Length: 340
Image (cartoon, rainbow, N blue to C red; front, side, top):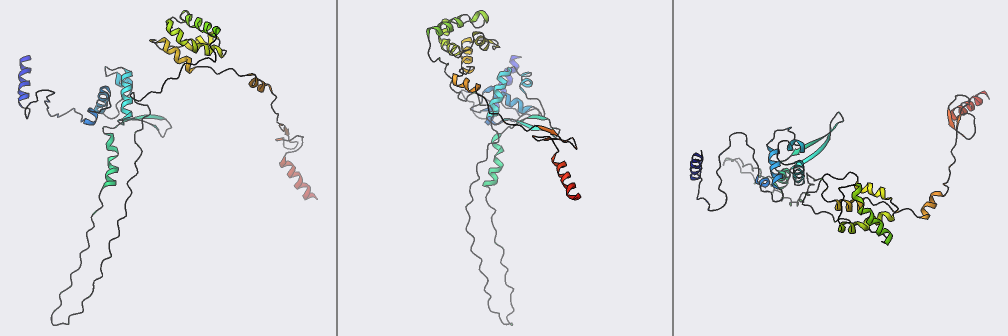
C-alpha cells in the first residue's frame, strides 16, 4: 500500500507544471466534479479571523439553504466546544460574514433569521458600479444631404443651416455619500480592547475596628463556603473592600450571601470573583439625618371631589353636594323654559 501511494505521489509530482520549489508547500490540484464549495481567499487568508472562525465559515457555506447553524447544531457535528463556536460566530458577525436578523411574521411571531454572505464586500459593489459608470456617448444626428438640382433650372440661393447650439457645460456630479454599513456587529470581537477594571472600593477611614472585622470575615469565609479558601495576601488585598461594605451598615450575613451565592463551576480564582462582586454589588451609603427627616415631613394633601348619585337617573358624577347630574339639570332647565 505504501509503495502504491509513493508511486502515485511521484507520478503526480511529475505532472506539476514548472519547476518544483525547494521549500514550502507544493499543491497537487485535481478538479472537483461534485460535492465542492468555492471559498474565496479573502476568507481563507483573512488576517483578522482565527482558524476556527474560518473553518466554521467554510462549514456554514457548504450547508444547504435552511440548515441549522446555531451553536448547539454546529457543536453536534464539530469537535470544537460551544464556547469556541460561539466566539467564532461573533468573529464572523463582526467582519460581516454572518448576520442575525429579527423579523416579525404576519402571524405576529418573532423569529431570528441567520444570513451568511460569502463575500461581504460585494454587497456594496453594484451601487459603486452604478455611481462610477461612465455616461453614454452622445452620437450627433446625421445631417441630411441636399438633393442635386438639374443645371437647366435656376440654382436657388444657398440656405444657411442653423448652427448647433454649443454644448451645455458639464455639471460636476457630487460623489455618492458613503452608505451605512450593511452589517453592524452587535457583540465586540474578542480582539477589541477591554475597559479598565474599576478599583476596589475603599472606606472613608480604615479604622482598626473595621480592619479587624473585615479580616475576621474573610478568614472565616471558607467555613461557610469551602471553595472560597483565600491566602493571606488575598485577605489583605480584599480587606478594604469588605470594610467599605461594613462602613455602609451592611450585615455580615448579607455580605457573605452576596459574595458567595451561585459561584461559577468550577471556581478557579475565588479572590478575583470576590473582588469583582465587592466592586459591582457595593450597596449605597445609608441616608443622613436630613434625608430621613425629609421622609417624616407631612406631604401636601389635595382635595378630591367625591362621587354623588343623580336623583333622577342614578348616574354617578363628581360634586361636593348631592343633587342632579349635568344632563338632568339641562333637561330640567329646558322643560322649565318650555313650560314658562
